[in-house]
Amino acid sequence: MSQINKDFLVELLQTPSPSSNEMEIQKKWMNHVKGFADEIRTDNAGNVIGVLNPEAPFKVLLAGHSDEIGLVINRIDENGFLHFDKMGGINPKAAVGMKVTVLGYNRTVIGVIGVNAQHHGGLKDDFNLEDLFIDCGYKTKKEAEEHVQIGDLGVYKTEPEILMDRYMSGRALDNRTGAFIVAEVFKRLAEKGCSVGVYAASTVNEETNMGGAYFAAAGVEPTMAIAVDVTFATDYPGVNKNKHGDIRLESGPVLAKGAPINRKINKLFENVAQKLNMNIQYELTPRATGTDADRMRLTGPGVPISLVSLPLRYMHSPVETVSLKDIDEEIELLVTMISTLTGEESLNPLED
Image (spheres, helix red, strand yellow):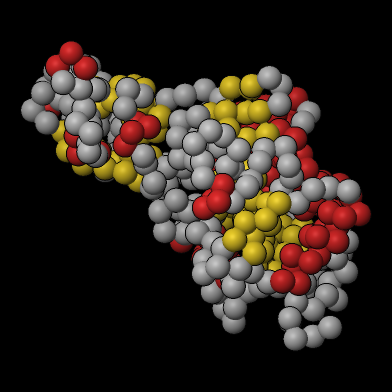
């Protein structure tokens, strides 16, 4: 991965964007892609969509969501401690002892998620979010309310790290990596040229309701849609591979297989991977994918979908970890597949 591209990914990772509050990161993404787009579109959900070849009848929608899991303040007690619920899939055990950036209505403040000292009994074994709180240094509820109010959001305060020049680790790689990959694919297709319309979307709200994906697909009315997300790597200690499959970092992009997935789109990816001599991994999504693909599929008359995912360790933790090699290969796979489309392809599984 080139340094300039890595810098943009790091910029995305350093920008707080809890689900429902993605405006700052969306503006950065839009500024990045507008230089090579024929059009830039936005909508009332908060999506940003870059367009190539807007007159082409065959339209490919790429969607990578920009939002991250977060904390939502639900109570401020008399001593100024902030209590919170989850905005997306927060793991209470991963939250203990973390630093937090609270996006207050009047000021951004730093806090820590306090934990009862082990000397005083520690946390009970079955604790949940209701047992945790954020300490920002306030002494009273009145002082806290000068900066923070109910409904304000917070995210873990971490910095991305490069591990052994091969892996990247940090919070919210789910799914800033997807938004980054979509932007990079869009840029390369603009440089290379393609015969179909390309609609590259940085979507919102995936971690909570996937409403951004619905707005994007309903507005574009694509011929096909591809969700670009992350999936569970299982190549670290303690994971039951018999139950969760064998997905590894540095073993290539992951294609989903299951009832929601259009087999013809997957075959297009497999043919390209074979020509590129690129490894592909598979995950099973029998009923639903749990990603933007599910909402895009059910817009308009129905949209054929595929899901291309990046293997990711430690999902929904402050130290999610991915391979830079996998990012590069996924970009190459997407660019090559889309650039080879003629616009005459049938995605109807009953047609040859």
